[in-house]
Amino acid sequence: MTAETARATLIDGKAYAAALVDRVAAASARLETAHGVKPGLAVVIVGEDPASQIYVRNKGETTQRAGMRSDTHRLADSTNQEDLLALIAALNADAGIHGILVQLPLPAHIDSAAVLGAIDPDKDVDGFHVVNVGRLAVGLPGLVPCTPLGCLMLLKDALGDLSGLNAVIVGRSNIVGKPMAQLLLGESCTVTVAHSRTRDLPDLCRTADILVAAVGRPEMVRGDWIKPGATVIDVGINRVPSRDTVKALEGKTRVVGDVAFDEAIEVAGRITPVPGGVGPMTIACLLANTYTAACRAAGVTPEELGA
Ligand code: NDP
Image (cartoon, helix red, strand yellow):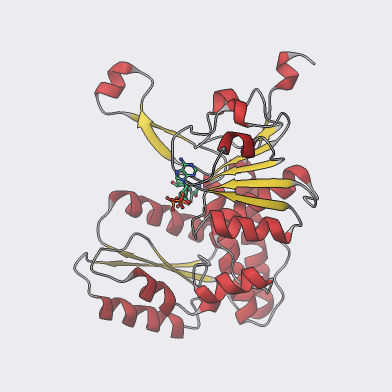
């Protein structure tokens, strides 16, 4: 095998996500024509955090591009919990809104768990409500967190049947690691979840046919942690100084994943790049979840969109 053919195939999350948004848009248009229901997503943001403002703007634009109703509620940093809960209650009662997303993090004076817990589970398009966490754990239909759902779609597209494969997930957060484990268990993988207390992490990673890195540590997973031919899903989004010294001194940054990409691409069979891998899938899956919630509200079975 030549060095060139040994390099991993890139999993193009950007292209997959664009196609998924198109499929959601087409399915949503059919839902509206046949049943008079236009999927609606409400995004609530509290405060002025610049990164959150960008995320929210992108979500609004993509939602509109998909032909859905998009409402954005921008609240002042000083908003109190009572007012926020009153808005959530109003959105829960609004029949034209099928998905509610509260942008995190919320200001420190607000109890995030209480706010997320107040969202109607059937409109909880982030999939963070304990009811949806429970549904996922017991295999009932619910709403699944967008990032792991996107990872699963990419894996199934790349590998087809996942049953019997060894999956190692590095990271056990409620928004990525744990739901990823549930989803892969649901696909009959043999799943191991690693975290900061895991012993011999490189050895463990080398057992993985599927390696999902969701850690938040730039390029922590090295090439020699990867089993040759494995499929690597890099969820990490980390800002590090630019490679260019002058630009770095000017404070310019670049984005890297949790996997040392240049090393990993020489060993893995398939790998998601950062950027352009998992990231674009998250927002596409948000729209897919909003469409699914709208179908259920209309008493219609959603068309299969991916995972
Ligand atoms: P969290 O900080 O919530 O969780 C990180 C996990 O990594 C924890 O379980 C932690 O273990 C584990 N961990 C930390 N250090 C180590 C270590 N040295 N060895 C092994 N495990 C370790 O992060 P998130 O899950 O929210 O996010 C993970 C990454 O994914 C981040 O880079 C984030 O930006 C990115 N992300 C990307 C998204 C996308 O759209 N592509 C969406 C969401 C997140 P412990 O539990 O023991 O502390």
